[in-house]
Image (cartoon, rainbow over the protein chains, first blue to last red):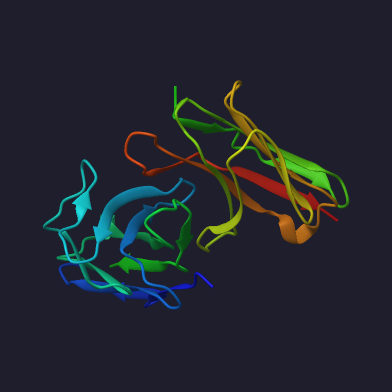
Length: 116
Length: 111
């Protein structure tokens, strides 16, 4: 149980385009999902907390208009990187918690974004 | 002081040895503690979590927690080359509940 998937696993795009990344909980309902970004040789940095049916909560320094998060159902959250630039190239990872009462996070396989 | 601190390593051990990974945290209110393994280019994978002081064993892995000293460790017995990865210690903030990650310790198990 507790399987989280992400799509796509890898994407290459041109500067100025938008990219959508999907995060799905496959065998459970996730009221809360998290989006992280990881640069090479660095640890994970939380970008935002995504709650089903409500607006995402963004961490300080993360532009909410650039990183659009939609948590439309209990099994799907999407992150859209708008007007991507080379500095947005990174490893984007989502996670989900199994239930509201727990804090164990299960991670998706990640999406490698490269902006040319 | 960082909220969650780990020695970045690399920690190198021979195959079959015990690898000991350490983590200290600053939030005295933290109640749960997690160890994740991350292979290069992959996302973190949950190995163990621990809530209570003492040891918790799962196969070759043992997590040890000492809340008074604010440290949590992970022991890997009979280390295998496939254990070579970065091990991330993570502690939820008692204020926000958000998971705070350490920088990770890179483990190298040499055949």
